[in-house]
Image (cartoon, rainbow, N blue to C red; front, side, top):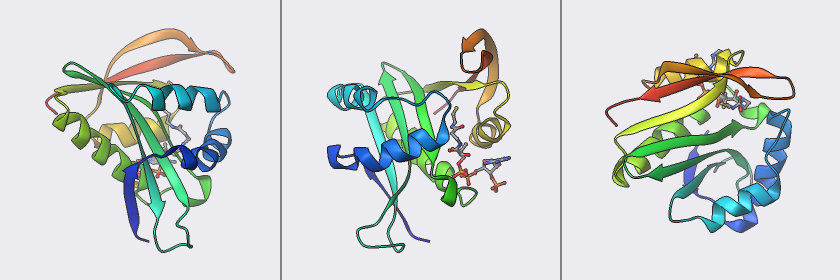
Length: 153
Ligand SMILES: CC(C)(COP(=O)(O)OP(=O)(O)OC[C@H]1O[C@@H](n2cnc3c(N)ncnc32)[C@H](O)[C@@H]1OP(=O)(O)O)[C@@H](O)C(=O)NCCC(=O)NCCS
């Protein structure tokens, strides 16, 4: 499996939306992704392509992040269910953290559902630690968010 990590282009949105809908009970809408594309000053979306799976290489996952001043916020990350547990989210997170560092971020934050152990263990592997709880932050179903922080980017 050969991964290419690159900035999203507008024509990648249908593939990204298909993964988003498969990954979340409350998926982002296409309009939400388009709003991110329009905020190129702070927002960056990276996609992972499987360069040896097919031609053109399919999108297997993506990560959305903001950098504002010295803070980075991971807003969204998902991998196609067919391609999970192969290191794709890890590669996306590493690339996004590297880009954040270049853009001046010194620490990163994110929220994750309290029950989402898979994502929490991914984030811990990249140096994130639990930093607090936002009560009833999510709906469908209602659930607390764990805030995670990584210092020293
Ligand atoms: C969370 C998610 C992005 C992980 O993607 P992935 O490409 O499968 O993750 P990786 O293969 O890079 O995993 C890296 C590490 O994260 C942890 N991890 C990932 N999935 C896991 C799972 N299902 N159970 C336990 N640990 C898991 C492991 O430590 C894993 O390393 P290992 O495979 O060597 O044990 C993916 O499961 C997904 O899209 N989930 C739905 C969307 C979501 O929950 N996004 C996060 C919102 S905060």
